Image (cartoon, rainbow, N blue to C red):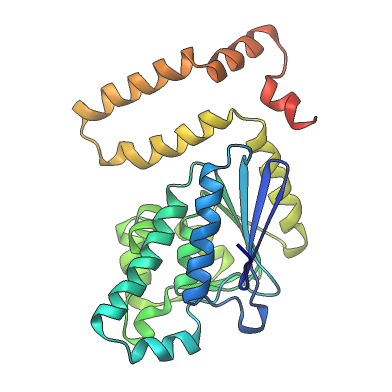
Length: 264
């Protein structure tokens, strides 16, 4: 599929997805949603990919919904709005449950729905100049489709505050509330993303995917559920090919195959 609103590249084990509508600060519309869903459907089944980097072209990461798209939404029926909203909700779920770790390279403004793309990243690294806001209440709506992921990341207390106020935040404040994992000077953003990518590539691919599942699933479980779930998970991983290779490499004081293969 040829994309008109995003770019998708793959270099060996690293995939890169970029919003490419810099003239409107990478605001998203129905086409962006469709193309992003298609890309993450591909990433989900591509076992060669180990890491995904999500970023925006130009000065912004993603400034929320496209104003021209919003003008058309105003005139839609409830049924049409529901269909559009379900597609957006599907996209965030697709990204959140992606078995490949997603690094957010937050190079500029992430506003409204754009913060949802930050929230579904496993690790978000922000440039110091980046700005953030859950601005939906300012136009009489709420951050609904992104809400489940933001609340998971920030906690209910912070989410209540920021959803209600629509506060515009600098990167340091976004780090303080837990929306981003790290803030670096703008000129160091690529170096930090590269370092993080290399760190992830040194870990077992299946272990990384299972770690994502562990963090997503366990908080929703009662003790009678998470005790057998976690015990079974570690038992299966220990006898898996990857687990055996990793433990044998550690005991033999050598690098595991997935590390040496990265350099091939």
